[in-house]
Length: 191
Image (cartoon, rainbow, N blue to C red; front, side, top):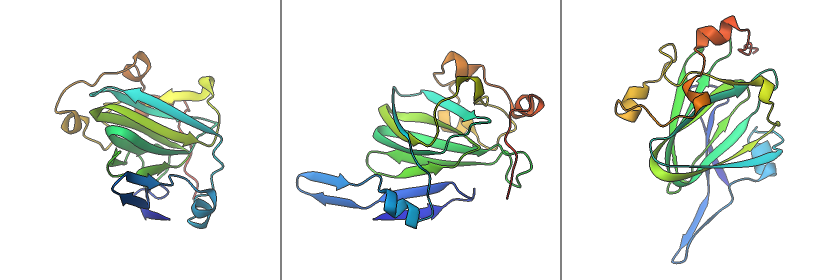
C-alpha cells in the first residue's frame, strides 16, 4: 500500500502511497493506520491541518518543546521543498537536514518525527499543504528556528535563488540554534 524509504536522518521517512490511475484521474490512500503501524510508524495522529500559500513563501522552521509533535506532511496542490532539521542536542546529526520535493504530481509524503524542526518553501504556487499531527498546539512551547541560520546544514540561498522568501513576522524573527540552545529550548538526543 505504501513505499517507505528511510532518509539519512533516522526516523525521517519518505512515504509514497500506491496510486491507481485511469482515464478519469487517480486515487490514493494517503493514510492507513494498520499499514503505517506495520511499517513502524505508530504515531497516533489527532489533528489534520491545511495551509495555503503562494509561491516564494517559507513557513518554518517550527518545533514544540517540551510537548513535541510528529507530523505526516504532503502537498496536494503546487510544489514545495520540505525541510527537516535535526535539532536534538547531542545527536550525531545535529544541525543536519533532509530536503524533499513534495507535490500533487509525485504524491510523496514526509514523516517528520518528534523533536525535529520542520519547514517548507513553496517553489510552485499556490500550494496546499496538508499535515497530520500527533499532539496539540502549545503556543507557550512553540519555537521557530531562524530560516537562514548559518549553523544549519541547508543552503536556503540555493533553494530560493538568493531571494528573501515571504515570511511571517514569527518566522522572520526566529532564533538561531545557538540562541535556542542557550534558552534551553532544544530537545535532548536519546537513542
